[in-house]
Every structure is written in structure tokens, then in C-alpha cells.
View 1: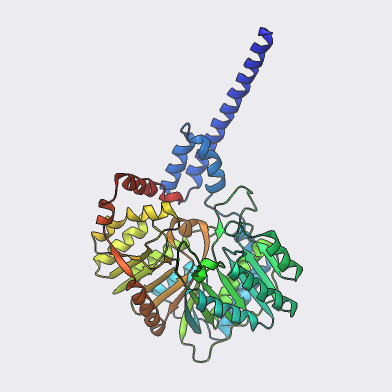
View 2: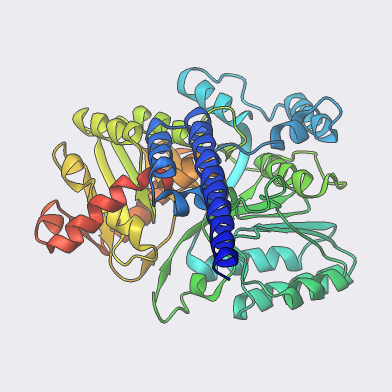
Length: 484
């Protein structure tokens, strides 16, 4: 009996030792992978140390293979490969737009840089309308869906089966039964609570609804999220901006109250550029390119030049972060930014500081009420270094601020999905609509002024006067900023 127990214990000990050795070896190889593959030195150091440090490795190892990758493999090859039908679409859209004189050919300096970041040119003769908050946005989107004649393209990060979600579903069901083709992409991480019944009902009515498949190459990978919000109708009108499909975006949340957000309605040749971004994602998800209207049409009286900027982890360079740095460096008089999440890297912080030192009126609007605690805490860590050079931080008071907007001088305005954080810079698929037009900039400035009136200025003392526990939380959150 003693011998049997001894043998069992010895066997279990050997198995445990082998398992621990394999775990340590896997952790070491993962740390080497992080060092070789991470886009930032901060991220590489954070992962490598946690992966080889007991007992942190027991948490860090599974976390790394869920969140640690920084490259989205296969997307570019699928999009631009020599045998890809997407390649033909890309070439045809550009050729038609140039033949019709709808592409700006005088891009120099800053404009040329922006076009190279976007892999698309500025288009002429567009009309862009600001849609402020949920009612204006979804009134316009649902009206366009109701008026669709041929097809509707729908893409959202979050879709909920609530009052707004059911309203959207009902419109799509009716239009599909009327013979309108509908292609619908949702992000499976953002929409993880969406019921299968919701999806099945749309499919049974003929709606082609698909997940983006951000984890196609690794089923445990949750890092790469398609954060874009796009609707295109008949290739003639399009929508993009910060709003998802959920009742909170209509201001119905008991927790957050009024929801401050901004979307844009676009007509003109920029619609084809926005449609192209959708189709690239659709091709990744389905390996199919549907028949669409690729003929860009100028808007009568449309005087706005527009650049559509898709960014994401499939890009060979950090396009989103470089876009913000470029816009900040272009500012001469005014730089106003609204973002719900503010965890910028050192390069963006340096660009903001330099702009303020040049005498630019730099204002950043953030929410006063958080929906993500770590991101909220991290934002306090930047107050002193920005205040020292004259950057003003505003905290929006009435409800939750979720808009992602930017204004540079009296000329450039942007509406999109990208936040000022590492996730948008490096990990999420985002879309930004950049408008070069003084009239549109004046409208954006008026919108910002109204929002600033509902803010209070945040100061470095807001952190100094907090408890020690709060200050520790801020520093810990700042340390985690590369992976937030």
C-alpha cells in the first residue's frame, strides 16, 4: 500500500514537473515572440516581463495569445493580391474617378501625406452634413434605408437587440422583402450579446449578415476589432461616425443619460471611397465582391473636398496614429479634438505639446463620466504635462461624450470612429472622414463651441487633490496604456 502511494505521488510529481517545464518554455517562446512582433517597445517590455515572471506568467500567457498579437495577418493579401477581385475594383474606381475629373490632382505637402496614408485621393464635389446625436443620425440613416432602390450596406461594431436595434432590423426586413439587396457586417466582439434569433430572422428574410471574423486565424484572438460604423445606400449616400446601434446612443441609458455623439452624411464621389472600405471588410469576411454602383457622381453645388481614411492593424505602418500626428502638426491657430478615450502614446503627446508651444489653441474634450475605468484613470496622468505647455483639457458634463471629431484651424474637420488611444492607433479597424472646406469647418466649430459650453476645464489639481488610492490607480493605468 505504501509502495503504491509512493509510486502514485512520484508519478504525479513527474507529470507536474514536465507540465511546469512546458509552461515555462511556452512562456519563454511567447516572450521572444512579443519582443520580435510588438509594434512598440513599451508593449514588448510589458509582455516579455509578465510572461517570464512567476506567478504572472499563469495569467499573462493565455492573455498574450488572446490579446497580444499586433498584426492582422492575411487581410492585405486578400485585399490586394494579384488574383484578388478586390484588385480590379480598386483599379476601376480610381480610373473612373480620374476620368470624370473628381480626383484632386494638386495634392502637395500635407495633402499628399494624407493621401499616401489613406491609399486614396481627395475627391471633389462632395456634400457632407454633420449629424449631431442619435435622433438626427438614425432619422437620416433609416430614411435612407427606406428610400433604397438597389442595395444597402450596413456595418456596425455594436448591434443590440433593443428598441433601436429592432427598429433597424424591421426596416431591413421590409426592404429585403421588397427586393433590395442587403449586406450586413457586425463585429463579433463588439456585438457578442447579439442574439442568434436576431441574426436568424434577418437571414431568413434574405439579408446577408456576416461576422467580420477577426479571429479567423486564431479562434482565441480578441485583439482585432472592426470598430467601423458605415452605411451605404445605392452607392449614392453614405454615413460614418461614432454611433453604434443601441438605445444608449439615443440617450435612453439610465446610467449615462444624454449620449453626445456625432455622425456624418456624405454624398458625392467620397461615397465610393467609403463603399470601398466596406467592401474590403466584406471580402475578408466572405471572399465575395457583390455587384455595386462604382460610378462616382458629383453633387450639384457640392464644394467639399473629402478624404476617406480607413486604418487598421493590417496596415504596414501605424496609419491612424500618423494621421493624428500629421493633423496636429498642420495646426497653426486652432486644434480642437473630442474623444471618449484619451490614452495617447508619447509621440502624440509630444505633437500636442509642440502645437501648444507654437501658440496653437489646443483643446481636448473628454467625458466627465467614464464607461471604462482604466482608460478614465489613465487620462488623469497626462494632465500635468499638457497643462504645463498650455493644452486645455475639457470634461463634458451633461452625459457621456462618445464623439470622435477633430477641427484644425478654419479649414480641416474630421468625423470618424478613431479614439486617441493605443487600440485605435494599432489594433482596431477604424474609418475617418476628413473634410477640407471652410464652411463645413465653421459648422464644426459651432458644434464644438456648444459642447465646450457644457464642459468644465480639467486641471492638474484634479489629480493632486484625489486620494492616494486613486493616484495609485492612475499610475497603474498609465503603465498599462500600451495594452489598453
